[in-house]
Image 1 (cartoon, rainbow, N blue to C red):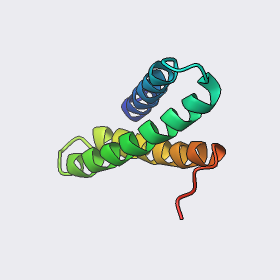
Image 2 (tube, rainbow, N blue to C red; image 1 turned 30 degrees about the vertical axis):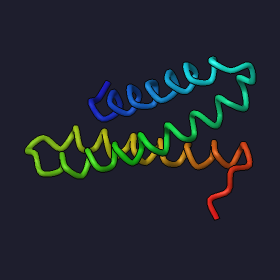
Image 3 (spheres, rainbow, N blue to C red; image 1 turned 60 degrees about the horizontal axis):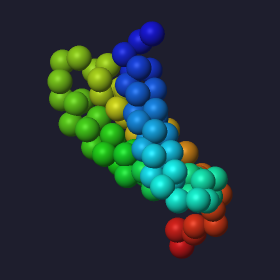
Image 4 (tube, one colour; image 1 turned 30 degrees about the horizontal axis):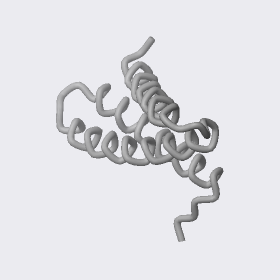
Length: 90
């Protein structure tokens, strides 16, 4: 498996793990899980994009590709997840 895909899967797995961890503290698991995942994915995606942009200055671009890819996927799924629980960004 290539390095960008590994980085992407690890970051998405961490977002899912922490969302499940925070959502399991309350009784409403499904709605809380989507909300927590959306918030964690948006924050994590923003951090991944910043880290990816900084890593573009290194010689090996595979780390930057992984962080930029995972940042884009986390932001995309984060917005979709927050819209699923009727959270509007207007």
